[in-house]
Amino acid sequence: MDVLLRVIAYLVVACQIVSCQPASPSTGTAITNVTVIDAVNGIRTNQTVIYDGDKIVSVNPDGASANVAKTIDGSGKYLIPGLWDFHVHLSYDERFTEDMPALFLSYGVTSVRDTGGILRKMLPIVEKMRAPDAIAPRVWFAGPLLDGTLVVYDGESRTEIGVRNATPDEARARIIELKDQGVDFIKIYEMVSPTVFEAMVETAQELDLPIDSHVPLSMRADIAGPRVDSIEHLRNIEFECASNASELYETRLERLNNPGGLSGFELRSSLHDLQRLPAIAAYDEARCDRVIDSLTSTMQVPTLRMTALNQAPPFDKPDWNEALSRIREDARQEWAAMAADLATNPVEAYTKFGEWARFLTGRMHQRGVPIGAGTDTPIFLAIPGYSLHSELEQLVASGLSPLEALSAATLRPAEYFGIEDEIGTVDPGKRADLLLLDANPLSNISNSRQISAVISKGRYLTPAEILSPRGVKTDNSPPR
Image (cartoon, one colour):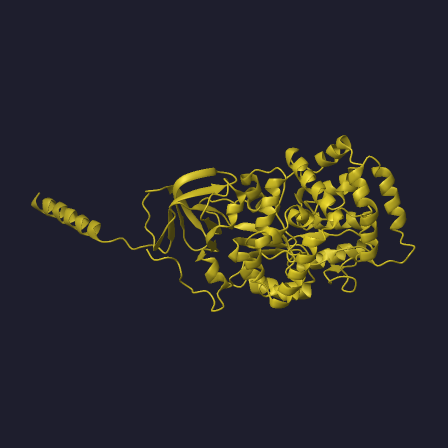
Protein backbone atom coordinates (compact mmCIF):
# COMPACT_ATOMS: atom_id res chain seq x y z
CA MET A 1 0.00 0.00 0.00
CA ASP A 2 2.85 2.42 0.88
CA VAL A 3 4.40 1.77 -2.53
CA LEU A 4 1.08 2.47 -4.27
CA LEU A 5 0.63 5.76 -2.36
CA ARG A 6 4.15 6.85 -3.27
CA VAL A 7 3.46 6.13 -6.97
CA ILE A 8 0.22 8.12 -6.88
CA ALA A 9 1.93 11.04 -5.17
CA TYR A 10 4.70 10.98 -7.75
CA LEU A 11 2.20 11.06 -10.61
CA VAL A 12 0.30 13.98 -9.07
CA VAL A 13 3.49 16.01 -8.68
CA ALA A 14 4.61 15.11 -12.20
CA CYS A 15 1.28 16.20 -13.66
CA GLN A 16 1.49 19.49 -11.78
CA ILE A 17 5.00 20.10 -13.08
CA VAL A 18 3.97 19.32 -16.67
CA SER A 19 0.86 21.52 -16.46
CA CYS A 20 2.98 24.46 -15.35
CA GLN A 21 5.23 24.26 -18.39
CA PRO A 22 4.39 26.73 -21.18
CA ALA A 23 3.03 25.00 -24.26
CA SER A 24 5.20 25.19 -27.34
CA PRO A 25 3.69 27.70 -29.73
CA SER A 26 2.63 26.52 -33.16
CA THR A 27 3.81 28.18 -36.34
CA GLY A 28 0.33 29.46 -37.10
CA THR A 29 -1.17 32.96 -37.16
CA ALA A 30 -4.46 34.02 -35.57
CA ILE A 31 -6.58 36.93 -36.73
CA THR A 32 -8.79 37.72 -33.74
CA ASN A 33 -12.07 39.55 -33.24
CA VAL A 34 -12.66 39.90 -36.97
CA THR A 35 -15.87 39.86 -39.03
CA VAL A 36 -15.66 37.09 -41.62
CA ILE A 37 -17.62 37.33 -44.87
CA ASP A 38 -17.93 34.81 -47.68
CA ALA A 39 -20.52 33.70 -50.23
CA VAL A 40 -21.44 30.44 -48.47
CA ASN A 41 -21.36 31.31 -44.76
CA GLY A 42 -22.51 34.92 -45.06
CA ILE A 43 -21.46 37.14 -42.15
CA ARG A 44 -19.80 35.80 -39.01
CA THR A 45 -18.88 38.39 -36.38
CA ASN A 46 -16.25 38.26 -33.63
CA GLN A 47 -14.31 35.37 -35.11
CA THR A 48 -10.78 34.09 -34.65
CA VAL A 49 -9.35 32.70 -37.87
CA ILE A 50 -6.17 30.64 -37.57
CA TYR A 51 -4.03 29.73 -40.56
CA ASP A 52 -0.80 27.79 -40.60
CA GLY A 53 1.26 27.91 -43.76
CA ASP A 54 -1.03 27.69 -46.76
CA LYS A 55 -4.00 26.30 -44.85
CA ILE A 56 -6.83 27.70 -42.76
CA VAL A 57 -6.82 25.66 -39.55
CA SER A 58 -9.91 26.94 -37.74
CA VAL A 59 -12.65 29.57 -37.74
CA ASN A 60 -14.26 29.99 -34.32
CA PRO A 61 -16.01 32.61 -32.19
CA ASP A 62 -13.52 35.04 -30.68
CA GLY A 63 -12.14 33.95 -27.36
CA ALA A 64 -11.51 30.37 -28.41
CA SER A 65 -8.08 29.27 -27.26
CA ALA A 66 -5.38 29.84 -29.84
CA ASN A 67 -1.87 28.47 -29.47
CA VAL A 68 -0.13 30.35 -32.28
CA ALA A 69 3.13 32.07 -33.08
CA LYS A 70 1.56 35.37 -34.14
CA THR A 71 -1.67 37.19 -33.42
CA ILE A 72 -3.23 39.94 -35.51
CA ASP A 73 -5.94 42.12 -33.98
CA GLY A 74 -8.82 42.16 -36.43
CA SER A 75 -11.04 44.46 -34.39
CA GLY A 76 -13.13 46.64 -36.69
CA LYS A 77 -11.87 44.77 -39.77
CA TYR A 78 -13.42 42.38 -42.28
CA LEU A 79 -11.89 39.17 -43.60
CA ILE A 80 -12.94 37.83 -47.01
CA PRO A 81 -11.49 35.20 -49.35
CA GLY A 82 -8.75 36.35 -51.67
CA LEU A 83 -10.14 37.70 -54.93
CA TRP A 84 -9.86 36.31 -58.46
CA ASP A 85 -9.49 38.22 -61.67
CA PHE A 86 -11.11 35.64 -63.94
CA HIS A 87 -10.03 37.18 -67.25
CA VAL A 88 -6.47 38.43 -67.67
CA HIS A 89 -3.77 38.36 -70.36
CA LEU A 90 -0.38 38.17 -68.69
CA SER A 91 1.59 38.21 -71.94
CA TYR A 92 -0.53 40.64 -73.99
CA ASP A 93 1.56 43.76 -73.32
CA GLU A 94 5.14 43.16 -72.26
CA ARG A 95 5.25 46.53 -70.54
CA PHE A 96 3.03 45.05 -67.84
CA THR A 97 4.12 41.41 -67.62
CA GLU A 98 6.89 41.75 -65.04
CA ASP A 99 4.93 44.00 -62.68
CA MET A 100 1.56 42.30 -62.95
CA PRO A 101 1.93 39.72 -60.15
CA ALA A 102 2.79 42.33 -57.50
CA LEU A 103 0.12 44.74 -58.76
CA PHE A 104 -2.53 42.02 -58.59
CA LEU A 105 -1.57 41.03 -55.05
CA SER A 106 -1.40 44.62 -53.83
CA TYR A 107 -5.09 44.94 -54.70
CA GLY A 108 -6.06 41.65 -53.07
CA VAL A 109 -6.18 39.53 -56.23
CA THR A 110 -4.70 36.22 -55.08
CA SER A 111 -5.73 34.13 -58.13
CA VAL A 112 -5.90 34.85 -61.86
CA ARG A 113 -7.15 33.00 -64.94
CA ASP A 114 -5.16 33.82 -68.07
CA THR A 115 -7.52 33.53 -71.03
CA GLY A 116 -5.10 33.68 -73.93
CA GLY A 117 -1.38 33.71 -74.58
CA ILE A 118 1.13 32.00 -76.86
CA LEU A 119 2.80 29.16 -74.99
CA ARG A 120 6.38 30.20 -75.69
CA LYS A 121 5.62 33.37 -73.74
CA MET A 122 3.17 31.94 -71.23
CA LEU A 123 5.11 28.97 -69.93
CA PRO A 124 8.03 31.02 -68.50
CA ILE A 125 5.56 33.45 -66.92
CA VAL A 126 3.57 30.66 -65.30
CA GLU A 127 6.71 28.89 -64.10
CA LYS A 128 7.96 32.08 -62.47
CA MET A 129 4.59 32.81 -60.81
CA ARG A 130 4.34 29.24 -59.51
CA ALA A 131 7.84 29.19 -58.01
CA PRO A 132 7.71 28.33 -54.26
CA ASP A 133 8.90 31.75 -53.08
CA ALA A 134 7.15 33.86 -55.73
CA ILE A 135 5.17 36.86 -54.53
CA ALA A 136 2.41 36.24 -57.05
CA PRO A 137 -1.19 35.14 -57.38
CA ARG A 138 -2.06 31.55 -58.14
CA VAL A 139 -2.42 31.22 -61.90
CA TRP A 140 -4.50 29.07 -64.23
CA PHE A 141 -3.89 29.39 -67.98
CA ALA A 142 -5.40 28.37 -71.32
CA GLY A 143 -2.57 28.85 -73.76
CA PRO A 144 -3.47 30.56 -77.06
CA LEU A 145 -6.88 31.64 -78.32
CA LEU A 146 -8.04 28.76 -80.51
CA ASP A 147 -9.23 30.50 -83.66
CA GLY A 148 -10.25 29.25 -87.11
CA THR A 149 -8.80 29.48 -90.60
CA LEU A 150 -8.53 33.21 -89.99
CA VAL A 151 -6.96 34.39 -86.73
CA VAL A 152 -7.98 37.67 -85.09
CA TYR A 153 -4.95 38.06 -82.79
CA ASP A 154 -2.40 36.89 -85.37
CA GLY A 155 0.62 39.02 -84.49
CA GLU A 156 0.05 41.28 -87.50
CA SER A 157 -3.37 42.92 -87.14
CA ARG A 158 -3.16 42.59 -83.37
CA THR A 159 -0.92 41.16 -80.65
CA GLU A 160 -0.15 37.49 -81.24
CA ILE A 161 -2.19 35.48 -78.74
CA GLY A 162 -4.22 33.33 -81.17
CA VAL A 163 -3.50 30.30 -83.36
CA ARG A 164 -5.06 28.80 -86.51
CA ASN A 165 -7.26 25.71 -86.44
CA ALA A 166 -8.55 25.20 -89.99
CA THR A 167 -9.76 21.60 -89.65
CA PRO A 168 -11.17 19.34 -86.93
CA ASP A 169 -8.04 17.17 -87.01
CA GLU A 170 -5.82 20.21 -86.58
CA ALA A 171 -7.94 21.35 -83.64
CA ARG A 172 -7.82 17.95 -81.94
CA ALA A 173 -4.04 17.72 -82.29
CA ARG A 174 -3.64 21.26 -80.98
CA ILE A 175 -5.67 20.63 -77.83
CA ILE A 176 -3.89 17.36 -77.08
CA GLU A 177 -0.60 19.22 -77.36
CA LEU A 178 -1.86 21.97 -75.05
CA LYS A 179 -2.92 19.39 -72.49
CA ASP A 180 0.57 17.87 -72.63
CA GLN A 181 2.02 21.35 -72.06
CA GLY A 182 0.03 21.73 -68.84
CA VAL A 183 -2.83 24.10 -69.68
CA ASP A 184 -5.70 24.22 -67.19
CA PHE A 185 -8.50 24.91 -69.71
CA ILE A 186 -8.94 25.97 -73.35
CA LYS A 187 -10.24 29.15 -74.97
CA ILE A 188 -12.29 28.94 -78.20
CA TYR A 189 -12.38 32.13 -80.26
CA GLU A 190 -14.72 33.78 -82.76
CA MET A 191 -13.55 32.67 -86.22
CA VAL A 192 -13.88 28.90 -85.75
CA SER A 193 -16.32 26.95 -87.94
CA PRO A 194 -19.06 24.75 -86.42
CA THR A 195 -17.19 21.55 -87.30
CA VAL A 196 -13.97 22.79 -85.75
CA PHE A 197 -15.91 24.01 -82.69
CA GLU A 198 -17.44 20.57 -82.26
CA ALA A 199 -14.03 18.89 -82.48
CA MET A 200 -12.63 21.30 -79.89
CA VAL A 201 -15.46 20.67 -77.46
CA GLU A 202 -15.29 16.89 -77.82
CA THR A 203 -11.51 16.80 -77.39
CA ALA A 204 -11.53 19.10 -74.36
CA GLN A 205 -14.24 17.02 -72.70
CA GLU A 206 -12.28 13.82 -73.35
CA LEU A 207 -9.22 15.41 -71.73
CA ASP A 208 -11.24 16.87 -68.82
CA LEU A 209 -10.35 20.45 -69.73
CA PRO A 210 -12.87 23.21 -68.93
CA ILE A 211 -13.88 25.24 -72.00
CA ASP A 212 -13.90 29.02 -72.19
CA SER A 213 -15.26 30.73 -75.30
CA HIS A 214 -16.65 33.59 -77.25
CA VAL A 215 -19.74 32.61 -79.23
CA PRO A 216 -18.25 31.92 -82.70
CA LEU A 217 -19.60 34.23 -85.39
CA SER A 218 -20.54 31.16 -87.45
CA MET A 219 -22.80 29.84 -84.67
CA ARG A 220 -25.76 30.89 -82.57
CA ALA A 221 -25.52 31.62 -78.87
CA ASP A 222 -28.14 29.10 -77.75
CA ILE A 223 -26.36 26.36 -79.72
CA ALA A 224 -22.71 27.07 -78.87
CA GLY A 225 -23.22 28.53 -75.38
CA PRO A 226 -24.53 25.43 -73.60
CA ARG A 227 -21.57 23.39 -74.92
CA VAL A 228 -18.95 25.47 -73.07
CA ASP A 229 -18.25 26.32 -69.45
CA SER A 230 -17.81 30.09 -69.70
CA ILE A 231 -18.39 32.91 -72.18
CA GLU A 232 -16.44 36.18 -72.12
CA HIS A 233 -17.67 39.77 -72.57
CA LEU A 234 -21.23 38.56 -73.37
CA ARG A 235 -19.65 38.33 -76.82
CA ASN A 236 -22.14 37.88 -79.71
CA ILE A 237 -25.08 36.93 -77.49
CA GLU A 238 -26.80 40.15 -78.55
CA PHE A 239 -27.26 38.79 -82.09
CA GLU A 240 -29.48 35.98 -80.83
CA CYS A 241 -31.55 38.34 -78.65
CA ALA A 242 -32.79 40.26 -81.71
CA SER A 243 -36.19 39.75 -83.27
CA ASN A 244 -34.45 39.22 -86.62
CA ALA A 245 -31.81 36.82 -85.25
CA SER A 246 -32.20 34.34 -88.12
CA GLU A 247 -31.70 37.06 -90.72
CA LEU A 248 -28.61 38.34 -88.89
CA TYR A 249 -27.22 34.82 -88.79
CA GLU A 250 -27.64 34.25 -92.52
CA THR A 251 -25.92 37.55 -93.24
CA ARG A 252 -22.98 36.58 -91.03
CA LEU A 253 -22.60 33.25 -92.81
CA GLU A 254 -22.48 35.00 -96.19
CA ARG A 255 -19.89 37.54 -95.05
CA LEU A 256 -17.76 34.87 -93.35
CA ASN A 257 -17.06 33.54 -96.84
CA ASN A 258 -14.84 36.64 -96.93
CA PRO A 259 -14.97 37.58 -100.63
CA GLY A 260 -12.98 40.74 -99.86
CA GLY A 261 -10.06 38.81 -98.41
CA LEU A 262 -10.10 40.64 -95.08
CA SER A 263 -7.84 39.66 -92.21
CA GLY A 264 -9.38 37.88 -89.24
CA PHE A 265 -9.41 41.08 -87.21
CA GLU A 266 -10.93 43.12 -90.05
CA LEU A 267 -13.63 40.57 -90.78
CA ARG A 268 -14.63 40.16 -87.15
CA SER A 269 -14.72 43.92 -86.59
CA SER A 270 -16.81 44.49 -89.71
CA LEU A 271 -19.42 42.02 -88.47
CA HIS A 272 -19.52 43.58 -85.02
CA ASP A 273 -19.91 47.05 -86.55
CA LEU A 274 -22.62 45.81 -88.91
CA GLN A 275 -24.76 43.87 -86.45
CA ARG A 276 -24.08 44.70 -82.81
CA LEU A 277 -26.05 47.93 -82.29
CA PRO A 278 -28.85 46.99 -84.73
CA ALA A 279 -29.28 43.71 -82.83
CA ILE A 280 -29.56 45.57 -79.54
CA ALA A 281 -32.11 47.94 -81.10
CA ALA A 282 -34.14 44.90 -82.22
CA TYR A 283 -34.14 43.32 -78.73
CA ASP A 284 -36.91 40.76 -78.28
CA GLU A 285 -37.48 40.05 -74.60
CA ALA A 286 -39.15 36.64 -74.95
CA ARG A 287 -36.58 35.44 -77.44
CA CYS A 288 -33.67 36.72 -75.35
CA ASP A 289 -35.02 35.07 -72.21
CA ARG A 290 -35.08 31.73 -74.04
CA VAL A 291 -31.44 32.25 -75.00
CA ILE A 292 -30.53 33.22 -71.44
CA ASP A 293 -32.30 30.16 -70.07
CA SER A 294 -30.15 27.96 -72.32
CA LEU A 295 -27.06 29.38 -70.58
CA THR A 296 -27.81 28.62 -66.93
CA SER A 297 -24.92 26.15 -66.80
CA THR A 298 -22.51 28.45 -68.63
CA MET A 299 -20.72 31.08 -66.54
CA GLN A 300 -20.76 34.58 -68.00
CA VAL A 301 -17.75 36.82 -67.46
CA PRO A 302 -19.11 40.16 -68.72
CA THR A 303 -15.97 42.29 -68.07
CA LEU A 304 -18.25 45.29 -67.47
CA ARG A 305 -15.38 47.52 -66.40
CA MET A 306 -14.46 47.39 -70.12
CA THR A 307 -17.76 46.88 -71.95
CA ALA A 308 -19.50 49.50 -69.79
CA LEU A 309 -16.49 51.76 -69.26
CA ASN A 310 -18.41 54.90 -70.27
CA GLN A 311 -20.95 54.21 -67.52
CA ALA A 312 -18.25 54.38 -64.82
CA PRO A 313 -14.97 55.72 -66.25
CA PRO A 314 -12.01 54.68 -64.11
CA PHE A 315 -10.33 58.02 -64.74
CA ASP A 316 -13.17 59.76 -62.87
CA LYS A 317 -12.34 57.94 -59.63
CA PRO A 318 -10.38 59.84 -56.96
CA ASP A 319 -7.73 57.11 -56.71
CA TRP A 320 -7.15 56.76 -60.47
CA ASN A 321 -4.02 58.89 -60.63
CA GLU A 322 -2.46 57.05 -57.70
CA ALA A 323 -3.21 53.70 -59.38
CA LEU A 324 -1.90 54.99 -62.70
CA SER A 325 1.36 55.99 -61.02
CA ARG A 326 2.06 52.32 -60.28
CA ILE A 327 2.48 51.30 -63.93
CA ARG A 328 5.45 51.92 -66.21
CA GLU A 329 6.09 55.47 -67.39
CA ASP A 330 5.59 54.75 -71.10
CA ALA A 331 2.29 52.98 -70.50
CA ARG A 332 1.23 55.65 -68.00
CA GLN A 333 1.67 58.46 -70.52
CA GLU A 334 -0.18 56.53 -73.21
CA TRP A 335 -3.08 55.69 -70.91
CA ALA A 336 -3.31 59.23 -69.52
CA ALA A 337 -3.68 60.52 -73.07
CA MET A 338 -6.27 57.85 -73.89
CA ALA A 339 -8.24 58.67 -70.75
CA ALA A 340 -8.20 62.40 -71.56
CA ASP A 341 -9.49 61.68 -75.04
CA LEU A 342 -12.29 59.39 -73.80
CA ALA A 343 -13.28 61.96 -71.18
CA THR A 344 -13.74 64.71 -73.78
CA ASN A 345 -14.86 62.56 -76.72
CA PRO A 346 -16.89 59.61 -75.42
CA VAL A 347 -17.69 57.04 -78.11
CA GLU A 348 -21.46 56.74 -78.50
CA ALA A 349 -21.25 53.09 -79.52
CA TYR A 350 -19.43 52.30 -76.28
CA THR A 351 -22.18 54.01 -74.30
CA LYS A 352 -24.97 52.10 -76.03
CA PHE A 353 -23.27 48.75 -75.72
CA GLY A 354 -22.36 49.51 -72.10
CA GLU A 355 -26.00 50.11 -71.24
CA TRP A 356 -26.90 46.85 -72.95
CA ALA A 357 -24.12 44.92 -71.18
CA ARG A 358 -25.26 46.09 -67.76
CA PHE A 359 -28.86 45.26 -68.60
CA LEU A 360 -28.05 41.81 -69.97
CA THR A 361 -25.82 40.96 -66.99
CA GLY A 362 -28.63 41.84 -64.60
CA ARG A 363 -31.18 39.90 -66.65
CA MET A 364 -28.93 36.85 -66.74
CA HIS A 365 -28.35 37.05 -63.01
CA GLN A 366 -32.08 37.26 -62.35
CA ARG A 367 -32.65 34.11 -64.41
CA GLY A 368 -29.96 32.06 -62.67
CA VAL A 369 -26.94 32.36 -64.97
CA PRO A 370 -23.68 32.23 -62.95
CA ILE A 371 -21.56 35.37 -63.17
CA GLY A 372 -17.77 35.55 -62.85
CA ALA A 373 -15.65 38.66 -62.27
CA GLY A 374 -12.97 39.37 -64.87
CA THR A 375 -11.43 42.48 -66.39
CA ASP A 376 -9.42 41.71 -69.58
CA THR A 377 -6.36 43.25 -67.92
CA PRO A 378 -4.28 44.98 -69.25
CA ILE A 379 -6.46 45.80 -72.28
CA PHE A 380 -8.23 49.19 -72.49
CA LEU A 381 -7.08 51.04 -69.35
CA ALA A 382 -7.24 47.98 -67.07
CA ILE A 383 -4.66 48.50 -64.33
CA PRO A 384 -3.86 45.03 -62.94
CA GLY A 385 -5.70 44.46 -59.67
CA TYR A 386 -7.23 47.93 -59.53
CA SER A 387 -9.65 47.12 -62.35
CA LEU A 388 -11.08 44.09 -60.52
CA HIS A 389 -12.59 46.41 -57.90
CA SER A 390 -14.13 48.45 -60.70
CA GLU A 391 -15.64 45.22 -62.02
CA LEU A 392 -17.18 44.47 -58.63
CA GLU A 393 -18.74 47.94 -58.61
CA GLN A 394 -20.12 47.42 -62.11
CA LEU A 395 -21.60 44.04 -61.17
CA VAL A 396 -23.46 45.68 -58.27
CA ALA A 397 -24.63 48.44 -60.59
CA SER A 398 -26.04 45.76 -62.91
CA GLY A 399 -28.13 44.19 -60.15
CA LEU A 400 -25.97 41.84 -58.09
CA SER A 401 -25.83 42.36 -54.34
CA PRO A 402 -22.41 43.12 -52.83
CA LEU A 403 -22.23 39.55 -51.51
CA GLU A 404 -23.14 38.17 -54.94
CA ALA A 405 -20.46 40.34 -56.52
CA LEU A 406 -17.92 38.98 -54.04
CA SER A 407 -19.08 35.48 -54.95
CA ALA A 408 -18.35 36.27 -58.60
CA ALA A 409 -14.74 36.99 -57.61
CA THR A 410 -14.27 34.17 -55.08
CA LEU A 411 -16.61 31.18 -55.16
CA ARG A 412 -17.69 31.14 -58.83
CA PRO A 413 -14.13 30.86 -60.18
CA ALA A 414 -13.43 28.00 -57.78
CA GLU A 415 -16.59 26.23 -58.96
CA TYR A 416 -15.50 26.64 -62.59
CA PHE A 417 -12.37 24.60 -61.92
CA GLY A 418 -14.08 22.24 -59.47
CA ILE A 419 -11.85 23.31 -56.58
CA GLU A 420 -14.43 24.86 -54.27
CA ASP A 421 -13.32 22.39 -51.58
CA GLU A 422 -9.88 24.06 -51.68
CA ILE A 423 -10.53 27.77 -52.18
CA GLY A 424 -13.26 30.41 -52.34
CA THR A 425 -14.57 30.58 -48.76
CA VAL A 426 -13.12 31.12 -45.28
CA ASP A 427 -13.34 27.61 -43.87
CA PRO A 428 -11.00 25.15 -42.14
CA GLY A 429 -8.99 23.14 -44.63
CA LYS A 430 -9.14 25.81 -47.35
CA ARG A 431 -6.09 27.56 -48.79
CA ALA A 432 -4.84 30.56 -46.87
CA ASP A 433 -5.70 33.19 -49.49
CA LEU A 434 -7.46 35.98 -47.60
CA LEU A 435 -8.06 39.71 -47.74
CA LEU A 436 -8.27 41.87 -44.61
CA LEU A 437 -10.33 45.02 -45.16
CA ASP A 438 -10.71 48.18 -43.12
CA ALA A 439 -14.38 48.65 -44.06
CA ASN A 440 -17.42 46.47 -44.72
CA PRO A 441 -17.77 45.53 -48.43
CA LEU A 442 -21.42 44.57 -47.91
CA SER A 443 -22.39 48.11 -46.90
CA ASN A 444 -20.58 49.46 -49.97
CA ILE A 445 -18.81 47.22 -52.48
CA SER A 446 -16.24 49.98 -53.04
CA ASN A 447 -14.91 49.10 -49.59
CA SER A 448 -13.23 46.11 -51.24
CA ARG A 449 -10.54 48.69 -52.06
CA GLN A 450 -9.89 49.43 -48.37
CA ILE A 451 -7.16 46.82 -48.00
CA SER A 452 -5.32 46.45 -44.70
CA ALA A 453 -3.44 43.28 -45.63
CA VAL A 454 -3.32 40.43 -48.10
CA ILE A 455 -2.71 36.83 -47.05
CA SER A 456 -1.36 34.98 -50.09
CA LYS A 457 -0.45 31.29 -49.76
CA GLY A 458 -0.20 31.84 -46.02
CA ARG A 459 2.01 34.96 -46.18
CA TYR A 460 0.76 38.11 -44.47
CA LEU A 461 1.64 41.14 -46.63
CA THR A 462 0.61 44.76 -46.69
CA PRO A 463 0.12 46.44 -50.08
CA ALA A 464 3.15 48.64 -49.41
CA GLU A 465 5.34 45.62 -48.71
CA ILE A 466 4.17 43.89 -51.87
CA LEU A 467 5.04 46.91 -53.99
CA SER A 468 8.28 47.72 -52.18
CA PRO A 469 11.22 47.94 -54.61
CA ARG A 470 13.36 46.41 -51.88
CA GLY A 471 11.31 43.23 -51.99
CA VAL A 472 9.22 41.50 -49.37
CA LYS A 473 10.60 40.40 -46.04
CA THR A 474 10.32 36.69 -45.29
CA ASP A 475 8.81 37.28 -41.84
CA ASN A 476 6.69 40.38 -41.74
CA SER A 477 3.55 39.50 -39.82
CA PRO A 478 2.71 41.96 -37.06
CA PRO A 479 4.31 41.11 -33.71
CA ARG A 480 2.21 39.44 -31.08
